[in-house]
Image (cartoon, rainbow, N blue to C red; front, side):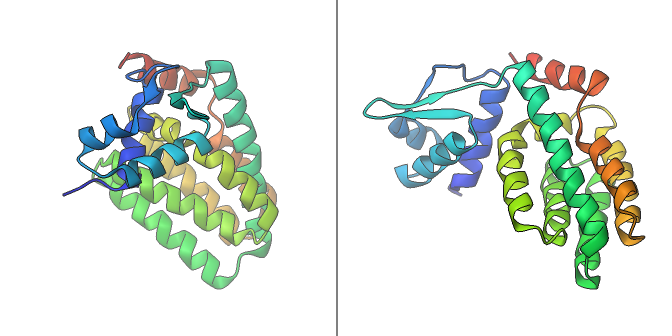
Length: 216
């Protein structure tokens, strides 16, 4: 079965953040199309998405080249993401409709199933749906746009983070606190729980850097 642009992008994302592909490496469309067994169209789309996420740079008449985020920049991005997501959760706790709450709870249940199966890839995508449901429940279009943009840039790092020992179960427990606060209509509690969930500091940040370094 041929790979889609999303699959090509996900593979290249991981190779960039783990050092398989290094800063300055050229991402050649023809070579990648041959490697993945696809036409140039999904490869071109994948490279466009990598550039939009800040992991690659397209240079006119030269091609697309790998960029890489340093540890300090990565920490700063997670700090800002934590605040944006906290704002979304706070607003969702005030504005979520019955339908919004049902979607959040359904996404939470889907995460539980993946965590129980120890399926980090399934959990990653269901976790994405969980956060998306909360952003939509905030009914704040500009805030959602900004959160989505940064969220896309951090996707590969969030995926790696979930591979740390017991991180899926811990993440799910943190989700439970967020859901409870939103359902109860407690904006401050929802914001605190979300901020703590997304912020990556101390041991968690060290674990993430170790995950990146272990595949170098």
